[in-house]
Every structure is written in C-alpha cells, then in structure tokens.
Image (cartoon, rainbow, N blue to C red; front, side, top):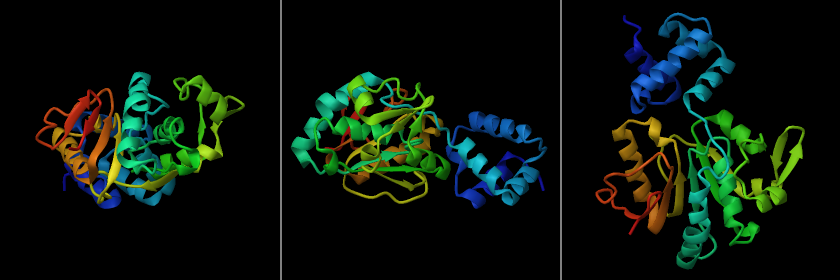
Length: 258
C-alpha cells in the first residue's frame, strides 16, 4: 500500500473527522510535513501510528492543523461599523436578547470582543454569545481568558481598563465577560448548525478552505440565520456570489439574509 498524502487524508478523517480535502492542499500539506519532520518521523503511516499512541501528540496535531491566529478587535474599523451601525440595527429588529454565534472562535478573542462591543448597548447580564471551534485545546485556552499585550492592542482603552487585569506580562479578562460566552466544540464542515441566529461572526478562517468548502459553509450560514440576520466576515474574505446564496450585501464585511 502507498502511504501517500491521499492515504493520510483518509486516515486522519477516520481518526479525527477533520476532512483535509476541504483545505487548500499545497498549504496544508506543507504545514503537516513540517510538523512530522519536527517530530523526527519519516512516513505518514508512522506518524499516524505515533499520534494514535500518544494523546499529547494527537492534541498537538489537531491544534497545529486548526490555524489559530487571533486577536481582539481585529481590523478595528470593522468593529466600529459593528458597534455604530450593525448592533443598534439588530436591537431595533430583534430586541436586546440577541442570539449570536462566533464560529471558529479560536482562543476566544472574538467572542469576548463581541461581548464588550455589545456591552455598550445592552446590559451585560442580558448578553449571551455562543462560541465554537474544532479544536478542544484552543477552547480551553479561551476559557482561561489569559492574553498577551499584542492580542489586546486594539481593544478600546475604556474597555481595556474596565475588563482586563494585568498579571505579570499577561492580561486576564474579567469573569463578568467570560460568563457571557458559552463555548463548545463544532466542526463547520461536518456538524449540523442551529437555526435562528441574529448574527453569525466567522472571520479569517475560511481563507484556508477550498472554494467549494467555503461556499458550502456560507450557504449553511445563510440557511441558519434568522430573516434580517447578519453575517460578519473577515477582511481577507469576500463572498463573490453572495446574491446566488441568498444574501444582500450591507458593506464589504457584513451580509444580510433578506
């Protein structure tokens, strides 16, 4: 049997239910080959056997695979649009009990940013953000809520002062923000989606997906948004055929379901 990359993709799917066919192959294969070499292993079959036997290395692999680059208020100008225009509009349409999903939330920077942005318009005890990610390890990091200075650089000063506490070289986000977010594990390509979201935030993740996998996710988002609900995407992304998918474009990064 040829233990090539095709074999490896099948073996990994059976082991993790992560479908590597959905990722841009050249980029992902290079990342995986680098990790295998770093562990001093030769051959995909030997690496699969290695992570099957070693729980810590299995977690390392999943963590490495799910690309976790995140920061609070990433692209601040888009968050200003969110705070100034989108959130007030959602409150007018749906009231203050908004149902919001931060998909592929990584280390929690995004859902916590959402809670802070919402807190300018809604009392904290009325805010609930659902946050999901494929990677269990980053969800644990998110729950811990400890960040470096670079991660929180774009947080508005008043919110930084109010909701972060400096601990050594790190910054701890306050419990009152943490308890407004509910984290769970979710695979965007495999798992079912809840319905009735007023806003879905999924930013700078789908760029790693193939065009067909990306379109599949955008279509699923549209189906599970409430009518007049909004999708907020990243600055590196665009939905070219958004009309065919049933969206109206509010601006470059916000799309509405009619």
